[in-house]
Structures are given as structure tokens and as C-alpha cells.
Length: 98
Image (spheres, rainbow, N blue to C red):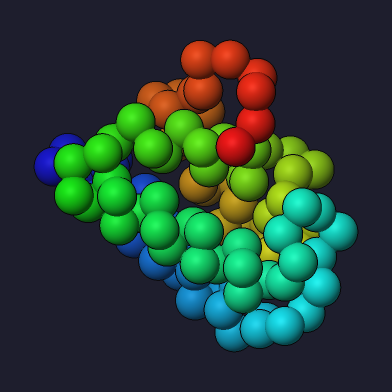
């Protein structure tokens, strides 16, 4: 596993922890709660760890500026770091959403 992917997965773990800690807090997105956002990110990270690297592109919509992460009041620093990697290496092929 390359170092940038390892860094991304580590950042995603932090993002999961942050959202799960917010628990049942509502989001202004298609996810009902911050916990739901965290569990979705966790699922994608686990799939990537198991070889389904292409799944990471689904997170582009979460971490894009003014995306779900912002709507869930997540840390801007984490979002910027994650989005930089995802935007560089794992952009979705089409703009169809999740």
C-alpha cells in the first residue's frame, strides 16, 4: 500500500471518530445523523483496505467543498487534507453522486 493511501486511510479513521463522536446530531444532507456519515466513511475505508480502492471515489462527494462534511460541521482541516488526496487520485468518473 502506498504512503499516500496509508495517509488517506489514517485521515479517514480520524474523520470517522469525529463524526461518530457527534452521534445523533442532525446533518443538513442526505445522511440523517453525523454518526451515519461516520459509518459510511468507515465502510468505504474498510472496503479500500480490503482491496476495493475504487470505492474511495464515493468519498469525493462527502469531502468536496460545501459537501456533506461541511453540512455535518466537521473539521475543516481534516476535510481539506482528505479532499486534496481524493481529488488528486480518486475523483469519480461521473458526477452521479453516491
